[in-house]
Length: 465
Ligand SMILES: [Zn+2]
Ligand SMILES: [Zn+2]
Image 1 (cartoon, helix red, strand yellow):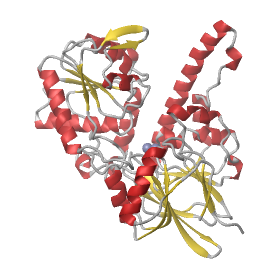
Image 2: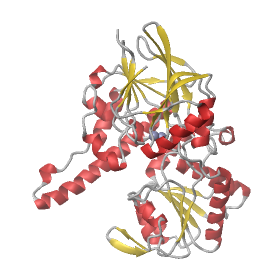
Image 3: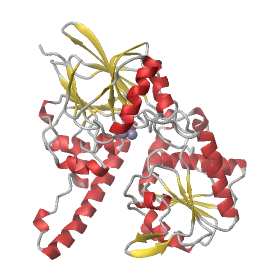
């Protein structure tokens, strides 16, 4: 018999790469297996740090890449256990992994061609996985579909209850129960917690008992701007630009944000503030696919969305673009269009074409509705770049640049504390999934609020439970 422990192999002092092992001494499970993104990207090529063949079960909290992106590697190295997640999470995870594989394959081809000209092609890093591999994995995956608020037997000694985390469709936080040396243990993994201020998903459910809580801390250092005020600003920007003969370009993430934006535009359409002859164009194959999943899981949405049955995001002015030819035709539209496309930070995707064709024109508005990381084109634009480079062409920035900050899919500091205070029992607190400087702030806030010392989890550190 061994002392039970938790060990994080990602999302330790950083936001991405979520992968947390729980070893009860009798069985070993993994919670999430996400990809490292941004400055830590190289870590995806490092060894996982554990043997996937020893993992009996994988729990997926939600379908974001930073929580599912290394799952194909688990299979590559021999994982064959059960996989527990909400069916909507399986749907989204598949879209996300296929998209990630596609980007990796494309990037590999580009780099390979360039390296070939230098005679260095054998040094080019291969994709972590391909689309074919992802498809094969989803076929062979031993999927266990969970429903919220039911207790499931995960392994011979571990039980888990999944509750709605309100972060993206299908997202869960997980309450895990087992016994260690005859003592019952309740361990909670928050996954990513949602922002209760939004139009489409319910607020995160309440947790019950946590002898140890592993909580995300993405926005542990701050509070978001008001959602309602952001919505007003969003609507005003759209109406003003369209009425003055311009177009609005909205770079957006395909999951959650795109649907939130459609929901507000639908509201504008119903209340009559969106001109009847406006054209709202969703030019993102991925957002289209994800929106279809949201439609399919209509019962998980907020009541105000459910009342539209299977059309929570549709309205007369909306046009969904499928192929590239259709996408190119958008360039001919002179005025009155709201163009929604990815990627959310303008570091790839169809948004680049729309920026190229629109950002030079002072009549247009580029409307940012999400976080722009350092080093991305989106960040350069909101930081006030006078010229930008797209496809080797230098383009002047004359369009109006508007940034709206109240649409985050993450709970802010206030909401995290509120959620924590709802537990009947909250003993030890461990901070994961956050940048270190923000975690330090959150740790001191927790000290003031609960008079408890939270621990910031280190990569690979064993935390005995
Ligand atoms: Zn997430
Ligand atoms: Zn995350």
